[in-house]
Length: 123
Image (cartoon, rainbow, N blue to C red; front, side):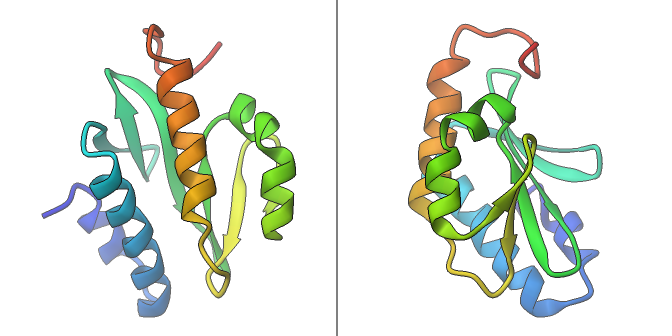
């Protein structure tokens, strides 16, 4: 059973649960070297103890948080998807097409950029 099952079990909307479960499964399968944990009431993926990406849920969307440095780097690509974002989160409507390529690029950027990083979050 995946580390995020209990988190998903708390979602009332089964369609939303299925969307987020598919995304979390994709991250787990595509990046099996990443560790997973629930922190701040959300599923997060880590590499050697440092934060790589986290996910949260709102009424009409889920969000992922790869840290502001990464959002800034990929801002143009995020905007091309039609997703909205702040400096800290990217919102994906539950009925939108999931851009796994973009999410993957952000994960890979964080893995590489933080390979020698020892803190959980960037300072």
